[in-house]
Length: 212
Image 1: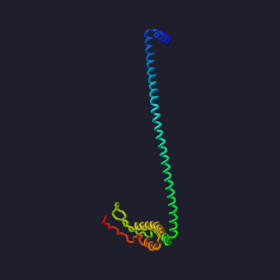
Image 2: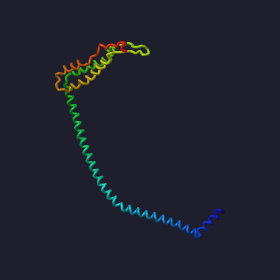
Image 3: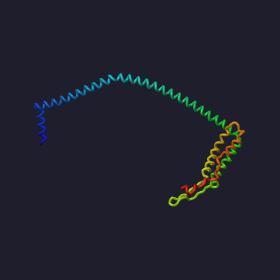
Image 4: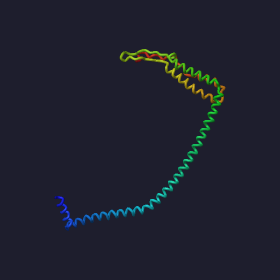
């Protein structure tokens, strides 16, 4: 019943002068809005049409630059790989010839070098497996509990120094095979052996208890 009354009221309002006026204002607002939108659309078309030739020209200029950059990149890459190929070829040739020369020099080297290396290997192994045989150590307890501790002196540092020197000499003498004159090799090997650091047999004295 309420809906019928409302419909009747709306129809009555539409047929009234006030209703006609309101309807006219709404329609006018819609029309004004559509005119405004249509005008904006036309302006968009105009701006786009005006800008198109400009951007097409800019694109063509940029495309020319891109093509030039691509050619420059291709040329640079070709130059790079040509240089790399030449470098690799020379490096390979260097390695091959160096190996050939070193092999020839090593084959003709003094046999005393390999004998000396074997001797050094034995010395190194003896110091490693027989470490305890060469170790000298003294100790005593100093102080009064709970501040009591063990004072120790040993020749362990000299054993390690000699073993390290022997190890380095084992690798270093291999380069003697590359020297042209092998006549002085025995004397040089003897000098290397004589200059190996000795193992200390005499230990530093223990500090007196009064020192602590």
